Length: 406
Image (cartoon, rainbow, N blue to C red; front, side):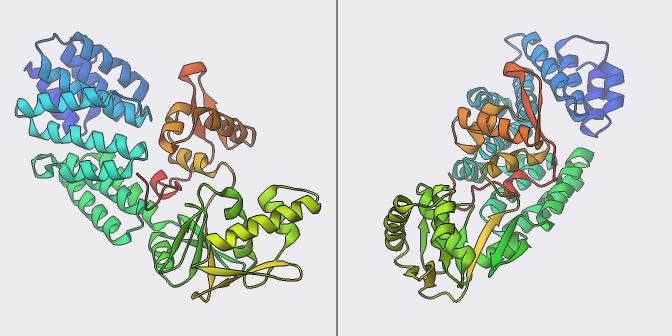
């Protein structure tokens, strides 16, 4: 390799971006374009990095499959940082095969880590975990091992396993210290800080308190009857009932839980479940039908008793009833949570990550923009959405896709 390019590559590997740029900033050959692209990515200039890496990939000749494969990895990493989740998985897999065949084990393993990251950002947790388990991390660089450990942390956090999450962060910190890459060290520090912050709210008998990961885990493993607003699920230590596809029944269950140990009035139940401002005989008749359905759904967990004012929960085994709520509640909480990472997302990527239609996402984005919670960057296909309430939380700790997501 050209001595200047080799020196620039070593400078980038050590985190000395400016020295690397001084060596290649005036060159337009394919290797120099690739190094410039990586340098700009490390400086946070992701759009410019994307352009340079695309130019580099096209500038490499067909027979130069190895450097082209490495550029594909860099392009994919930048695309994921830009939250462009529709990047070509096929191209990434092919690049990994080329690297493996050429004996570049470090980058071959890194290609697998990028596959896991794309699956995780797209909400495909089971596939991400299975792919992560397949990686031969012993053959990867310290930076790759650190990134894999951060992905393991996110998976453990989504599954509410605080011990595995803490262990993964410890592995990430050790590997990042060996890699000595400042941006990677900052990423580990940010994840560690996120783990120490609340990620949900717990409400018991009208008392609302923030909960950290291990506290949510403890609540869900207790004998308390938990009405989980993340998964729209009601559970105790022995039984679990999902009402994700029955929003009216979940709204009734949530209203009953909010009132526990007292009863919830018929007016409150009708307003929350049906959105009716004024209650009439038709609403009351519908409430009786829906309460009968809820009784049947919760038969193993709780009885529902009619009172003079309305209805009340009577848990079969639990002594307490708790509500598990997002930190940011509301109709569009999932979209707000996703954008809380401070990245600019396209509407298509938001839809892909949440597993909902793009039209639904676009409506939610416009509502949140009108509320001053989001701002739009660019126009048409280049439009991206950025939160005005960046919290520093990792989105994996906020999204309502816990425990049994696939």
